[in-house]
Length: 508
Image (cartoon, helix red, strand yellow):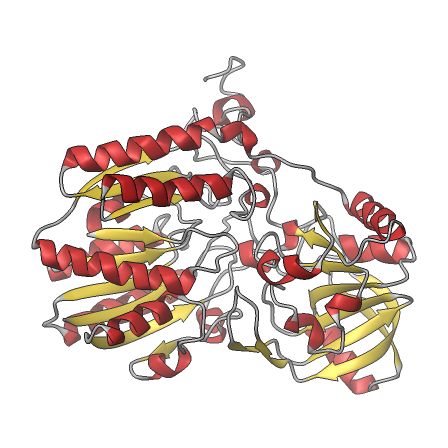
């Protein structure tokens, strides 16, 4: 087949302060920056853990002709700027039209994009594309955190989502998308589709597919798919940080017949509803997390990882809040490391002072209400140009550029400071400034779940903290306006109608 492909990825936290503009997509936020045409094959190397890389590798192995248009991603943030969205969407659609005729189209999207002027970024792109290409098959790979909308389901022939969190199966999902595309073309007509929207928001901190209940639910996805023989069954847990009406988990299935698709979707829906109450766990404030980590160290357990989950750059955080850092210093922790704190001005001061010097900085704390810069006298232990090679399962074997960087030390606390943000989800993001994570007793990472893929094998315990940051672990900590009244704000929790004062009686 001749397959045209493009990619446009952004996970939007509508409660986060910063927008995703042209510069954000040019950089890539830890993944390859914006690339076009044949350059996409060089940027999306076979070792990169992104869906497009897996799709291209599988398509080439199958002998298909792949026509690349454009691929880009930006670090999660507030909405995509209108001008940026329109520019990239137009270039993708115009590029696809110029590349026709073709047998099919593949798009590598996220599924939770909101732009300044469009609540449903992917649905809008797909609807515009469908209006141009008619009945040409369109297959899309999506993130496990997609907020799947009716427009997305209507405009695409198939949406194929990740099944792991940490997302270690991104490239594998691209390969699965190719298999679904091949099945759709072979069928010669669209699949039947059935979808079910789940009535509760899921905190990301309890979604790890290495743990229950998510682990068992995604095992059920594969089992039901195999038992029923449907071409694809999907369950996305949603991204509960987008204030629009279709923010929610969704189950959907494709089948040869409507009855086949409905049966698979309803089986999976029942399993998810039955597991609702199991999505829970302990949360610590900053001081409590540090105290618990020290107590575990005293029992001989190390390293301990504290997830600074609410300032997670992978969910819209700017990676610059100081809550956990303040707690580490206040407790005079003897052996800890925290990263990344993104502060280009502090990095510049460290580079000007040089390794071994003592520098005064007002670090971080500039983007989150309730936070403030932290005045520090720190030793500059190591300087770096910020270029490193990731090796862990999440980023894959990939090049990363964090910009000029440094390691500062205050007592026993070492601080990784960088110029560009990316979720700390790879051990090399400590090592590049001289910190060996396996020999550090307490590690604080600006991440919620993805770090687990690379860090879980080396740590004794993981704690989740709720220090200041724009990605609330509990949706009730935000003020929403657009959710359906019956949507439960957390598993087995109050509905939007109750929280917003529309009713004093439980809706469900």
